[in-house]
Length: 190
Image 1 (cartoon, rainbow, N blue to C red):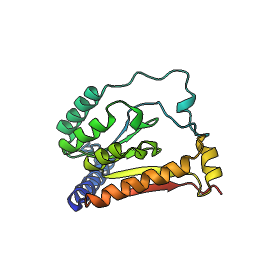
Image 2: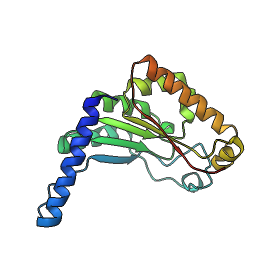
Image 3: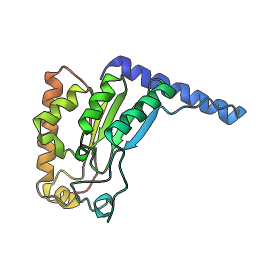
């Protein structure tokens, strides 16, 4: 992670905190979003016991990658510097998702992703993701015990695949000389 990007995010959050106080005390609104949450799809390849996405009988229509690009450019024109945090379902299942990450990088938009990590078994996906310069990558691990984690995720051997995939990301991150955080949200189950 570049220190400049971190400083810009911190500045924006500080500016917004001050703007919120101004609004609360005067009614004058200068607030602007600093981080945008973007659910790119509802489809998922896991069957987590606590998630509803994979149980849906139908999925909402999705925006195309071109529409996402247009929306990101519109947000950039309105907000200036901002951070977008992608999630889904499983965002890497969306056709062209890595293209969208590369688009964000080319446009100077910092981005992060919350993923189940299954796509990181592909060296090509890992290399393209890391070269698109993420601000952060988030995954969840439900337990250090494979039987509990795999049961919770509804997929056999998912803990092993996640740890292998994250090792792939860490290796390419190191090879590229980058330092963005890989955030592991660990639930304390067993």
